[in-house]
Amino acid sequence: MKIILFLFLVMNLYGADLYSLRIAHGEASENDLGQIISGDLGSHPRDLSVTALDGGYLLEENLFDLPIDAYIKGAVSYFDEDQFDDTYELVLYIKLYYNFDFLDNRVRFGFGEGGSYTHNILETEYLEAKSKEDHNSYYLNYLDISLDFDFGRLINYKPLYGTYAGVLLKHRSGIYGLINNVKNGGSNYNCLYIEKNF
Image 1 (cartoon, rainbow, N blue to C red):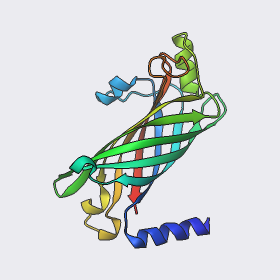
Image 2: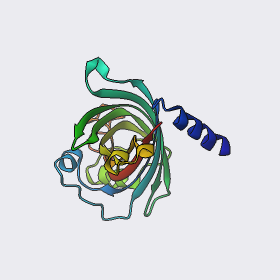
Image 3: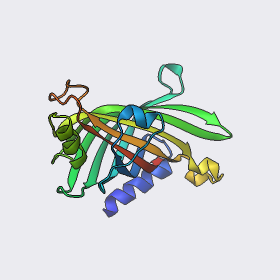
């Protein structure tokens, strides 16, 4: 653990901003992806939450001469279930950030796409599949949709530049049956997070 902290410190001092580290926490929603994106976050009647740690590597800055940064990312998530056994998740995905400046701050809209594997069936996914007579799967498509701002710029403290605070939607689904015949099942978790580029 000390070696990992030392490496993070050295990378941060280097200032290359090639890496990112994010910690997120959130709650499950009963609403589907479209409802959440339109602002109806909803909640789940059961006490279901997730804590996730993501790490990323910058593949391309200003992709196609646009203000878009491309990262490859990996994540480990812990799902605190209500009546099921707690579950762990591994995720690998590509994420694009569209950057724009607003009121002397950097704002980023992020969209990630990849794969998610859980070692147990998530409680919310089981309940949804049961209500719709659908299947469950350990492996599903993963979407990571976020909106954040540079907290360091907000408080005008240069050592924290590149530290982002934001909201995140973690989404797992079978893409209407394309993955493991999961047509209507899946899960959505609304999260808050802090992410540091170094």
